[in-house]
Amino acid sequence: MQIQDTLNIPDSPMPRLVIIGGGFAGITLVKEISKKDFQIVMIDRNNYHTFQPLLYQVATGGLEPDSIAYPLRKYVKRFGNLFFRLADVSFIDASKNEIHTSEGLLGFDYLVIATGGRTNFFGNRNLETYTMGMKTVPEALNLRSLILQNLEKAIVTKDPFERQALMNFVIVGGGPTGVELAGALAELKRFVFREEYHDLKMDDMQVFLIEGSGKLLGGMSEKSSHKTENFLKNLGVQVFLNCRINDYDGKKVVIENGSPIPSENVIWAAGIKAAPVDGMEQAVSQFGGRLLTDTYSRIKGYDNCFALGDVALMEGDANYSKGHPQVAPAAIQQAQQLAKNLKRQQQQKPLLAFRYRDKGSMATIGRKKAVVDFAGLNFSGTLAWFVWLFVHLMSIVGFKNRLATLLQWFSNYINFNSALRLIIRPYKRN
Ligand SMILES: Cc1cc2nc3c(=O)[nH]c(=O)nc-3n(C[C@H](O)[C@H](O)[C@H](O)COP(=O)(O)OP(=O)(O)OC[C@H]3O[C@@H](n4cnc5c(N)ncnc54)[C@H](O)[C@@H]3O)c2cc1C
Picture 1: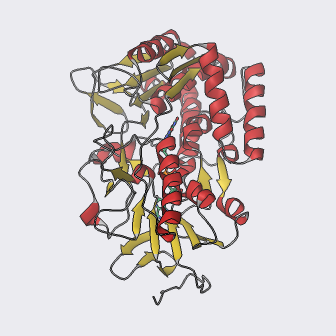
Picture 2: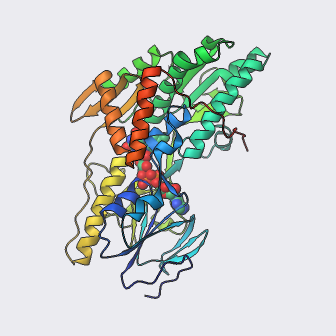
Picture 3: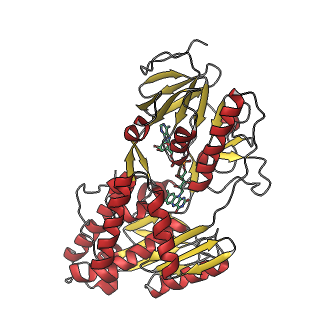
């Protein structure tokens, strides 16, 4: 087939496999796939892979952003016959086997869409405009700046109502991100802000965690959920369950059946929707806009286009009728399976259907406070915290990043403090 190309990829006798997205699914596929069988092109709008589970630590000054981001060029350079292009993919023309990007056109023989998810504000414009998201490194850095800027403003304002709004932190969404962020903010208040902002009445700083359902960490066991609630309450977090946010105007959070909360710091951790690329509309499902695939990750209606990870909704895995959870292990396992199947397809062997192996869940609330559900066991406290630290440390991409994270954690543990509370790039709402 004549392949269109304005991204300067050399011609090759091998079929071209284009991967959109260098997240967990994209980098796993690159690692696992046979480089002898394909010319591989990875495209991402960022030149780095983000380890999203630790974004909240960047936002709360516990880790440098460099520790959780890894350059994609450095990652792909160790594999031969692989090209990386920094570009934003805007449209897929599957009828012509080509994609449209910010840098031009690229043809493909096989296409893998692994573009992940984005924040879901459920159509509420105000929430989108005024709350802070936390899905990318720039968003985490914005949040870090906002927290510090608002405390500085709280010191100088003479208006007690404004001061309270600047010191109220409202986190919407009681999943792992919301829980971890609430715990981290409560610990910052207790161990760091109290000392550093001695001219501010720190008892006035309030952390609210608002969850629409009746339990925190909805995907975890009742026991872990209760334990988490207790950990947070002991840290002084005000937990509101069965509570929905109706609106937010940048100053005041309007709650269904409750009094409004004045706050200039509202963090939205309540929803995710897929980030598919235009052109695949016929395969977009009603559930969070994810792309429907069969059990071989093939997008419905296409033989040579695949979707992996958060953007995909796989049909046919009996235990997951509404798709797999949007977590890193699902993205990684799907990519591993697709690599095997592409090899089998080349060898004209039958394809293997995907089955998700749930390896358990965990979340950390703070120092020596974590919950783990694993193989039917639920445990919490110090042991769970060390398990959480170990699993996350080992999952970070790159030895240097792992080492930097370990050293930073060790230093934070010993000193009860970290020196990353810098407003390098002040946050300004657009
Ligand atoms: C704050 C947070 C905390 C999380 N915590 C956990 C956790 O503790 N445990 C867990 O298992 N999971 C966690 N997750 C979920 C986990 O990070 C995702 O399930 C996982 O990243 C999905 O991998 P992916 O490869 O599908 O997508 P991603 O990792 O999101 O990668 C998508 C990539 O595609 C690129 N991209 C997107 N659109 C385009 C485009 N149009 N053009 C070019 N490039 C594009 C992006 O830049 C990105 O690099 C968390 C997620 C967040 C946001």
